[in-house]
Length: 414
Image 1 (cartoon, rainbow, N blue to C red):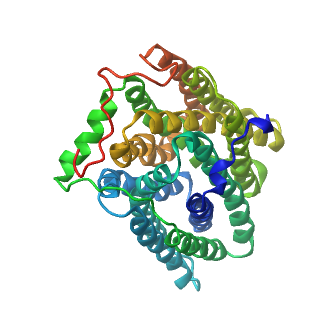
Image 2 (image 1 turned 90 degrees about the vertical axis):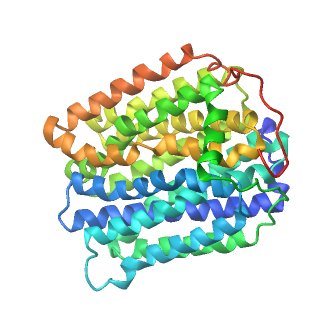
């Protein structure tokens, strides 16, 4: 398998710098999430409080993602990335200023809201600068390598964050601020490839261009509709209930951080595997891989030991990463280059559009029906819906449009 792995993107200096910046960005996000969660629970908050605070980040992204996508096709992507990462570093530093006392829950929510607003510009700009830095034959391996960098941050961030939180609740905030600043400096050193910004029209018209392109692809439309449902009713409840069950069942937050690290390790294994494997029917692989996430809610309910729970997160991480990688590569291949920023923002909006609402309602739902009912419903949804997606035109190969694909336009307008 190793002989088939393409590592040629690593010979590309801009790509190497982008990869390093991505590690720092994700590590900072993960450390900040752990810091905020531990701080909320330390003040006496419950699952509902954790869900509401975490939702602040998603709500900000939801409100600004389409704007971020439009502007990523208008302004230099490197400028957007450096400015927004600087904002992240400042936001993560705010709780440090009040280190003499526990930060108020509302302040933690504001911090995550600011970080979420910056993320709405970071995501599309990052995808656009990445796509422009890779040759056509490097996009699969390049995307897989970026996913590996992401998983390194996902693995390391929660572990270091929980360890630092055990010493002081302030330390994870310090880590987040430092790595956000380091990522900002790394992006400043990226030599952005030449590109022609689109002509500035109304934000609405530019956003509609992205919607129209996605609507011509039934398989992409189906994935855009499925993703928010799965995240709101499957992944969000698992995220919110994991730290609570970790504390109540296993007596500490260690299981919380380790389970997230195992999830990241599964994603890392998936990225390495996909660098050497080109499935003939990527859509089939994607939807059945997503169904593996059923192990997470079932593991939270019935795992006889913490090691079984960790194994469930490892396999689920492999499945979700495989699903995401198949989708990302198909989007790079099928969507015209001059629309990649806007379609990326639309995909991210769909992927996480309802996530904050799922996080916010998990606590009340769990209080009303119980943790078991919420998690069993999540397991049922992720088992039933993904296989049904194979009935959609073009889903088996993640290819096909209702009308012929337009030739990419490299002029200053669409």
